Length: 282
Length: 255
Image (cartoon, rainbow over all chains, first blue to last red; front, side):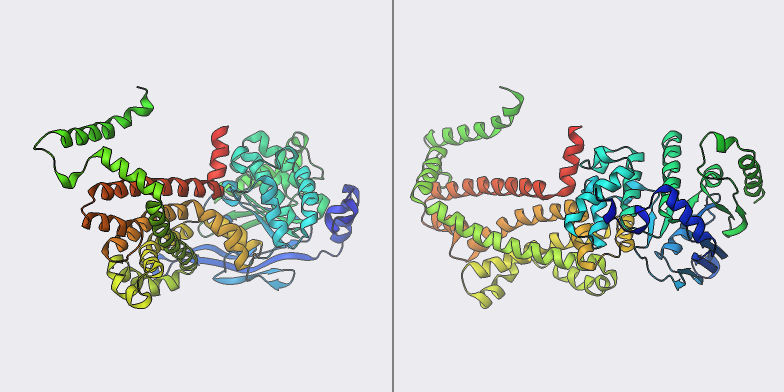
């Protein structure tokens, strides 16, 4: 077994990870924070503010969901957090440092997996792309690829090309590639928006499990309020025109959550009513 | 006759008519020669090696020029595709040079290199570089921004970005430019030989014409058609084999 050669967060068992993350939670360290983050496009009269002075903090190991209707700047916000775009005002800080450029520690799962995978590389090759650029020695690639593929349920598809896979499988490949970066922060931009309900629910549970096991901080963007409540430790609700935070809610539902029982839980339903009302009201 | 071979009807009919015309008293034109003589001349030319030597010389210049153009066009094209600000500066100069007929460069090239393969290759390279360059620039521009974002998030080095993302993503379109350039290379090489360079198939045709050996002239013309087709076919096969995207679309097609 190569278990012992794996680096820190991935090697711990589920139980140890839960213990560790709760231990970490005692002095809650901030993974990423925004301060009066503002983004506007255009000039003069055509200037439109997409994101208006958003300030929030995400603790290490926290699963934060950002929910909002279309047009509230969700995707722009995620790109600012990743460092793919520079804000026109305010700042993003990651582990105390101002974010100016993208970095490997902040992996991003793009919504459109079809555009984010290299079509000329197999599943294994796509995962290898991250290993190559992260400087993992060549002789360890095969082992890591098999491991990550197994984690994401892709073991049988390592030699397949993305075009040969279903949408859900392609999104798994993208997540596997992001995990290969060994990120401390995982940014997800409506990753399951294009998938059917059953596939979406399966992937929701897997991402929740992985984040918990690895102690990865996750910022997950969605327009589906139930998905946000189901996955999040916290849900930030956005309103549009201009995009701004209208509420920041702690989700007090214990993990692991269950697609049937959690969604029938009275707390879940109460949050659903509340967030639905917020989104309707704006 | 099956569907595959119906395309043969027209050329066979023309050959028969051409041969027939030769045998009608009074209709014969010496400068037209006739197919039997042409095929005989081709056979002899191939057998005694003269046509093969000329073919080698023409291909040498055409492929040398093509290779220079391909490398230059792809390298500069990738650079300009990635640096729109530079492209805005040199773009007008490129647009001004592009319409210059390549054969107009013959006097200059002759002055630099004298007769021989190098002067011919330079003219070929000048003609071939534009399609490669322009298609490469637009291919690099056309790469999905999300793929480039993946490279940015992974903090890939510029060399890795070009090697692992940009070239593979643009190769299918660059291949179109290379295919165009390959066809142009043979045209320009033969032209330079016909105009003045004393080597290759172009020069062979001119010599035959001046010696009133019309059978040899047609034989070489026919031969150029054959090798031109062969070159384009092999080029396409090579590019298909190299192109990662083509490979993937073949896999998809098999499903």
